[in-house]
Image 1 (cartoon, helix red, strand yellow):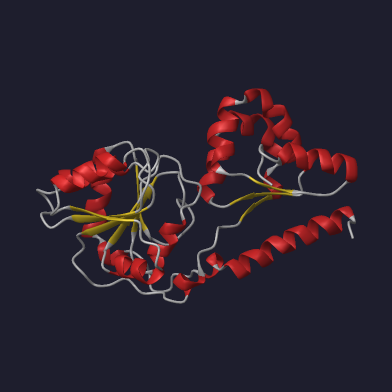
Image 2 (cartoon, rainbow, N blue to C red):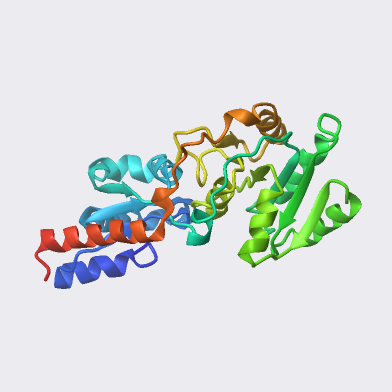
Amino acid sequence: TTLFSDGALALKIYKEYKIPYIIAIRSTDITLFLRYRKDLHFLASQILKNSSTITFISKSSEQNFFNQSFARKYAPGFASKIKIICNGVDAFWLENIRKRQHVVPHKLLFIGKFDSNKNVLQLLKAVLSLKDKIPAIKINLVGSGGDELDEIIALSNENPETIEYHGPVYDKEELMKLYRNSHIFSMISNYETFGLVYVEALTQGLPILYSINQGIDGTFEEKVGEAVDQSSINSICEGIIKLKSDYESYLPGNLSFARFDWESISKEYMSLYRRAADLKKIP
């Protein structure tokens, strides 16, 4: 169960029936509830205290949680119960892994929704500002919906040689072609719990441009991309330039995607539930 949305119900069931529960903390818990519902902080501390395990789907989410004043006040005893279990990707991507290609990188790709949280307009401004330094730079946009869509389409129409809007693409084979025809995947969301498209891109040999302390940041020890300050066009530009100039240093050949397999992930969650049941002697 998530911390706030269902956590209170899980706590009530636990107190009445002694049925154990596991908490999954998501970005909404951190960026909305913990920040704006301080009246619920004590309740949240009780939910976490009585949970069997506290899970995060990324290292960045765990760090953002412990950066909250709530965590500093209530969470000293929570650390021993924390488990990071990443989300998985469709088996299609794990069955079609491709190594990084030896190219002169200049083609970026974004896949997602065109809302203000995904920060696509900021990304496009950075790309357009790099035209003098990287004349061949181009970005492909895949997706639909969002409050910035009309402005993004207008910007694409004004700069057809640099920005190409493809609309939504649902066929995995077509998506794979788009990944493989690109050189860098870029998504600089303001808030991102994980971002499966990052992993999809990595399986197709694309280093990634992503936001500091958001989403996939901290998930890999290997050099898979560049983290940037998504609010700074200069930082975004520097990240793109670094990816271009050091392209051969990203994505080592031994990069493993085993932890993103849903079958393995489901077994890991099942082991947590069995352990919780054993500890509470639940049949």
